[in-house]
Length: 507
Image 1 (tube, rainbow, N blue to C red):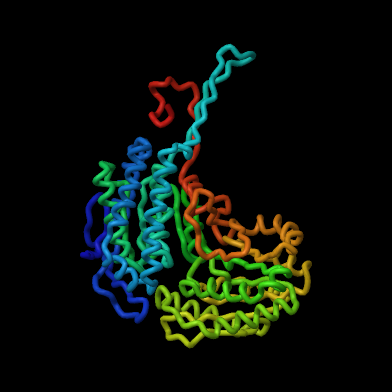
Image 2: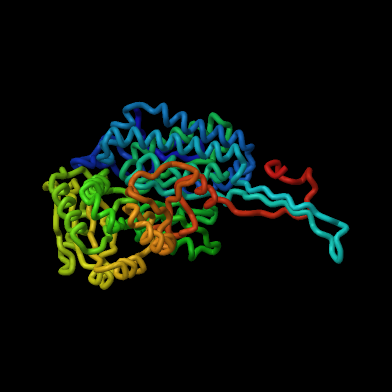
């Protein structure tokens, strides 16, 4: 596997000249083999010009050709060598098993969108026949369809080097919608990004599509990333990352002469409600499963269970005791980057210094590149009085909130920010309470689940991976599932058009 460190623009590749950087080995902080060149503003201009030129051609490609393109990308990614997995393990610290599964998730996601494209459902074609004899005014002939919104900027995520990066859900949805894509590769896994980017570039070539359908840039400064969002030819942004990063892009997009949507997944602590009957009967099993979800992948999931809500009682005491016991046995895990590990320790330190929060358990000692699992507890009244307790700690840290009664539990739920997921652990005796809480849960999160945890997002047409702000910038959208395509579409109505003038996809 040859890594050149080059930018991928216009069906070609060349070394960026705006500085250079090396990938960092997650487990040691050492430099990995290979140097990557940063894009200049001229490189960005070329990529977006080509994307804009490709847009009118690509968005009118036949559905079969577009579906075949997505399947070709999936095929090429599926056929990448084991060297890619080894490189990604070094760049991210993630396990082989996790990465092999994620690579196939990415492949299947592309195939799912290919099926959606073939179906034509996303076009939402409507034909409202005209009636020239209608009085007092003739009725016009109206036709309706969705078209691609325009070239899309996609920013790769650190925690999913395949599924939310160069060929991840944002890219797959945008390409399915008929939108060219310009990807800003994540600097934490540039080697992985190059290999996947070349797969897409090869698919563009083999499918006979315009070269501007795809480009991938490395950057060494914020200037190029910000300029990508500000570029007049970019018409939407897909982003997964920090709240500060998402808000910065939203501000840039809003201040453009033509504002554009930024679909940013930013911050979620994913509350877990353990209702009274579940606590009484299954506290031990729920506590063990909770720790498993908390420590999965060093807690570096946007759906990590960062908050436990429950009503005071013997069941809650037993649950906490068991969770503390299991957490104390947890070995440390390598985090995605040294910077993420540093930010995690800073977040844990901040909560440890809060007099209203008590650290009640921690895992085995870690080094500077690893995550040590931590569990805190606090009272509901203190939680509601201090908004900082809602801050996401990106790692295996969680906070138990003790509620005096049902009323206080409801008050905490009403106090929460928007979330990606809320999990409810319940048994038959909890049904009435769960039904009472459901309307509140629905307006707080995008995915509600029973007797499980938000970690593990099924790639399925019915999946919602989104939620009210700040979990996402637009709670009406999802970044997983076939509904993700609608982020990159807009409706057009055609009135009184002759059939031979109408676009082929509308006939």
